[in-house]
Image (cartoon, rainbow, N blue to C red; front, side, top):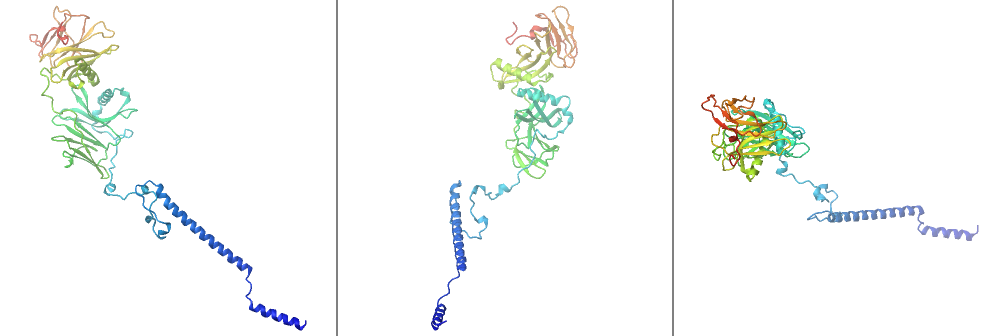
Length: 474
């Protein structure tokens, strides 16, 4: 190598020492990659912040609210704020703060259900002798449905003293219908009498049944058998225990002003509920003032059939041209015969007027027949009804209803000769049934007094005089 080459090499080495070293290409690539990653992350954070802010601004505008709370930028909420501090997007879903009414325990007393009725309590003898079946039949008649379409659930029964009459508290419904009631059935002059009928809804926890009494009316409260306590307050505030008749059954007498009375029920868990007591329908006082002066105080005989009586009363009201509610009545006798005729004999009157004997006869295949007698003579000893057109018979049937505790009945079919004794009809308590020739007009009837004194009959006269029409005998 020449001296010139040595000088040139030395000069180049000195030049390289004073120049900065060239950057490493791999290191530059890594640096650029890290910068791009930081830029993308920053862009993503910025985009997320904008999206959150947009949602926060849009949701309140879409949510129904009379006064939506303003929502600031997403960055205004501190990251450590608890969830309860963040305004709810749907205020209606936030449960309200419980107040005193919300915190009060709700009554949990069992509600009456026909699907699982409460057990019967009281005297099981009340359910015997067909009393429950008769009550079912009468309730069905008030609804105008067949007996087999009715379910009557007995809940409490007793024989009320001193009258000795049975009382049965029940709930009843028409099958396949929402028509349901509760009330009581007892025995009246015309047979079973439905009292205090109240519609039964699906929230009843205690059945309150006012009933008439011998001296004052009473109020039964019938609840579930595990009821802890039943109380009554005549003034609505001063409660006292009701008489404990059976588990979940109470009774109290109704005296004085009961317009504000309440019954309080305490359930087995200690919860309570108060309900207003219903008023007794009609008067429980013995009817004396305002009754007709010619009313026959004989009492009722025969077979109770309230639906038949009600049809007779409605027929009488129509004949008199008055509303049904304007008619009062008392039943003397109900009966029927083998050919299927059913009849009732009663005294009926328009309110404030005198009474007259009314006979109502229902014969198969014929329209009902209303027989009206003249105004009843005060102290009349006997009344009668004539059943005509009896299917399958060649005679009429004379029904003779004498006053109670009279003696022998004698009948003369031709009006000549001495009347002959008539065999009493078993089970009718003095009522006599006589076969009477068609078209007879001269037959005679004699009724002896209770002592059988032939010289002092209570009635001795023509039968036609007992069958006169409303406007007298023609």
